[in-house]
Image (cartoon, rainbow, N blue to C red; front, top):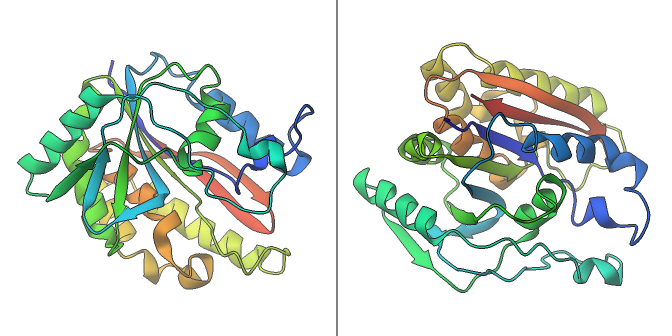
Length: 265
């Protein structure tokens, strides 16, 4: 069965696991509940996952080929136990190799590496979504120039993976401005989210991708994303969508932001 592509919010740091033995903090419970169902309720379980996280950038698109990647606790100032979290899913070298092949066939210069661990944009949301850590996973970097059209094109190149049983996951945040976390821009955040959702759900794929490539023209775009690394995983997911229309599958207000998730297919 053809798998969808997703753009999922990954929260803030280890937000879902701040209480070592208790429930999720109330502010993050709605997002956590969504993530817990997003993959579990798919009609068919993915054979593997390819994750594009906001927290890995390289000069060229780079594919991780490791068998058992370690975890990168790339956050700071959180409780000690959050630096002992585990999510020990196997790597997916075959998926990584297929990813590199598809990129090469479509003219993208791509690198490969085996040493880097999974950053928190991978293991934090997937620890909620796939708690048994039993789906092989590979990771693809962003390209450091953060060119939205290039990331859409990379997604388009990787679309065949969906027909081969792989789930493509863009992991980021639809709003990401670390200076504004006090609720003072909630109306502005809502306006940006409305405009972004209208672009994502455009029924014409070419128009959708063109609107996303020009995301800076959306209302309050640079206030929502002073730097766009947390939005770029959406571009990959949208590029991989092909003719599948984007669906707005989650929205919440958290830490003063408006945060959405999208599914294609």
